[in-house]
Length: 497
Image (cartoon, rainbow, N blue to C red):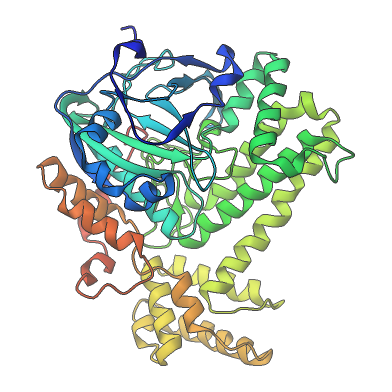
């Protein structure tokens, strides 16, 4: 089926100033086309925070014009829609050409916070859809919407989600589901795979053009190539490595599993992107696999730092023709190895309420992580209870989480002794700001999805409100911060999710 041309669609005046600098790179980078309209669209959820980021009135998102625009039934006045092409490694294997198979970049809006690209996900076929249908389903769209905004509220770099629109149009996945479109927002949706695409094809002019574009717009400090004898491309690789190291350290500290860390799912800006089979840990398990398509555990929780470095190495290979000396590229990648452990330790110290570093911190942190794993302790609940215990002095609710109470008591004694040894007072306020009460557990998302599939979106909005302020107590919503039910262990999330 050929995708429709966008000239046939009506336009909506959003009041935003639109442009599309990515479109100016030329036809080697994208295909201009429009979305395939959805029948009988309806609004599922909106994000006032993202509306404010864009300079849109939150009330306008409830209008018919917004519904038409964000369901693919209209285009923004001044927009320049396109689907971009990229390639990538999937599950460690070169997959060749990929691209925006179900996403469409409407353009970029000029905002008080800089240009923001606005993209529809689930908007229909593109030349890069391969064997897919170009659609997203309500289930996956709700998961992405909620997790994008939850990650932002946790302080973790992420693409954002402006709204979800739904439709009764049937879409086949494992079963027949209904279609939806999630509107995503980010300064850029460029991925590692964009660079791999041109490097693999030997299109060095386009590779340089893309790198120069990214440096000028997003990494201007790299233009002088500081630290690399004026080599801006090595400086870019180092800067991306550092942002990505900080990102994966935040994932590991909060217990977030991405689930499908292919190179085409890695943002050049160090953002969490492409929410598919993700999961926040329930019981702490470094070997946990959240994607049931991942039969060999490549993307298990504890493997994420190593896999992310592997992906950065592939980016380095793609940039090699521009960097020149392979030793320079390897030096640029070394920043990940240095920064990741430092960032992870800083995050874990904050979770323990320790504002300053000490040489014994690694043993303290390793000790509690081993205990959590050996006792299959619920990860979010442990850290929140520990925060309250430090504040109030009652550690019994924390001890109750461990089958090996004596082991926990030994660790707690070490925690107290090391804190006293160097006069570091444990800061409960820091802990309560570092250990969320609410995260998007799989069973919470599943409950919201089941209700939404029956036309009830209230649980989506309840979860959204809780996740937008995840460190608050939210009295009356204790169940949303409690242990997962037994059936949660049987929730299967795949790449199609």
